[in-house]
Image (cartoon, rainbow, N blue to C red; front, top):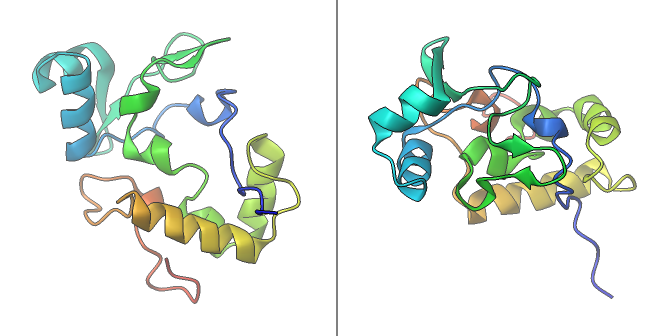
Length: 154
């Protein structure tokens, strides 16, 4: 019997909540604007906000990503930003077991009985297979940067 994955998205929207978390890297902007049949400039005018030196996706009146719809989930799921693709395999959750413990409480998609070691192994493989490890802290989300200064770098 194959082991269950440590994470399966339930499209609950927990990770879609809050301003400042959905960073748009250059590849994200190209993928999403193209997928929505907009030029990058028009996409940013309609859906972007420039904050703390980076482009981010706006939040709606409900405090969630502008592309999240209650009961439907992410309306741009196939073309979503890398930071969304990577959740819950963020640097903090990969280097700190306490962060993973808190993430499990927050996110119903993380398997509750997964060990920290299982989470790291699956997360590292997932991020690498999907090209989700960031390399430019000036334009990409810090949650996806490798944790090179820690023992458990991915």
